[in-house]
Length: 79
Image (cartoon, rainbow, N blue to C red; front, side, top):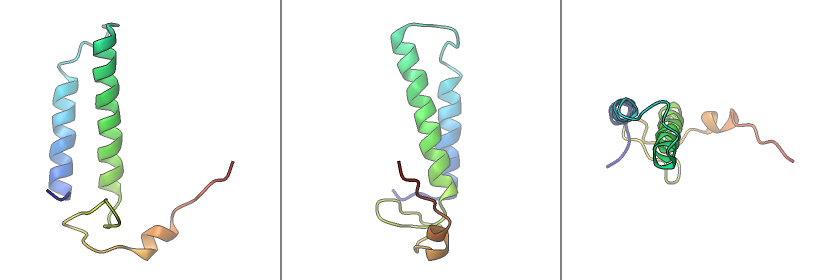
């Protein structure tokens, strides 16, 4: 299944629903790992939703082509 705005929004809603079932104050390592995975999932979904082009492994049905204009907005920092 390829990404599109609707599927990314659905995934974000599912992550929000899952987060609602995780105890907020529990310090059990299993719950901490689940909270971290949900946080990571939210970050991946937010990044995919903000990238409105298809390039490499990131393919979207609603933005099928690559965008050189989008690529020009990227900043690379060197260490």
